[in-house]
Length: 154
Length: 212
Figure 1 (cartoon, rainbow over the protein chains, first blue to last red):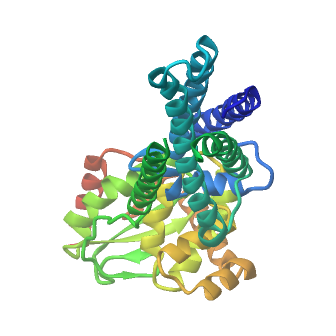
Figure 2 (cartoon, each protein chain N blue to C red):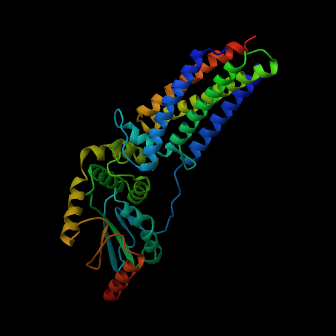
Figure 3 (cartoon, each protein chain N blue to C red):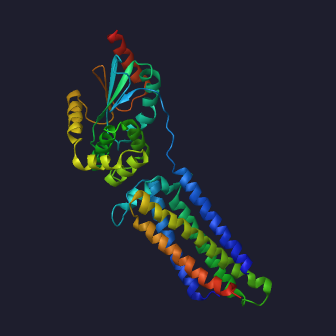
């Protein structure tokens, strides 16, 4: 069962994540220098792993966070419009959205773990923005999992 | 509800796995156009070639990158592969601190016989001036990507043993009147900038005629 706390955490983390991804996407497109703790950001952001099939990873991140923001807004509106459980059919909608948020954040967490491993073991450089984003998406996955798993458990 | 959740989790794992696969695929070393010409150190072409094209370049310079991916490839096909011209790359790092690092890295790669592969890679990954693409840690990653001896490359970067060679290149450029990059010397004639292919062709033909 999701509470307003779940929603605030997911919305807050998604907003901050969208800001970080948007900044990384902007520097990638404009070619301007990154503000960074240490010098790892430029190394990571200019590596071949920063682009997937021609699409900068920062854009994928931005898309993911914006999708999460849209979904959590939709879920919040839906949950507050009707009392959950008034009809089995209608009650399914918030759960589906919550599960979708969890699934997207889970995919983001797995991909972030892969990128962090690349930074540590291949590039040997750490991008502080990327680490911040990895922490945010993991927090979203954990928060959404908490609500979703509680509800799905028998 | 549990079934739906399992489906969502499976979907997430598949999507993440797919993205990781695509990432590894797109990050694989790119194939570059390989033209069969003999290369030694920072020189490409037959040592017996009658004409020498000397290029003075900076790895952070966008026009140098354009020359490397365009005109140089065409010259290699038409003049270097046919034994008429040999190309000599001279370091002229003037744009920033990372220009110097890139020049040092390229000379260290030359000591392992991989100058031209390193040259192509540096021009492919270059971005703004001193934007982090040619920091020592990044150069080490490029060396690893090209299969260079890591320890030897690291030692070369740290020792500064190639700095004197770079200084000599710059002095030679100054002697020819080079003030910016890219600049070229063909048969004693100075060509400034990434000029159209025809300009190089004319200068080479002229030098070939003189050599006959």
